[in-house]
Image 1 (cartoon, rainbow, N blue to C red):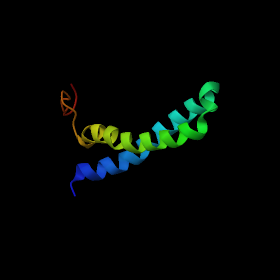
Image 2: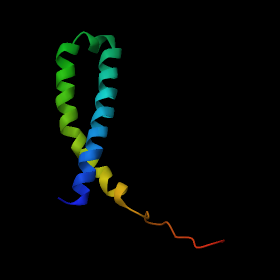
Image 3: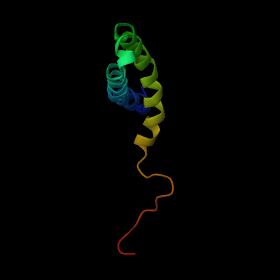
Image 4: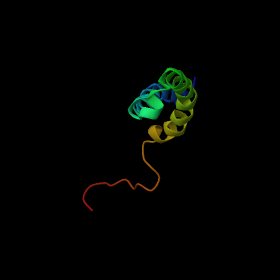
Length: 78
């Protein structure tokens, strides 16, 4: 497997936790949504499972860069 795939898998797990937590808090904090939590939380789990690899794939190339475009290496004092 390519390095970008490994990074995507690792980042996907972290993104999944953050996205699920944000959605779960939103569902449980809003009284109108909390009434339907029995149906919304499983749906949110599926949505999170599908969306997190996409978000992680968008983040992975940026995490792999050693020097970001536009950064100039500095040698000594300027």
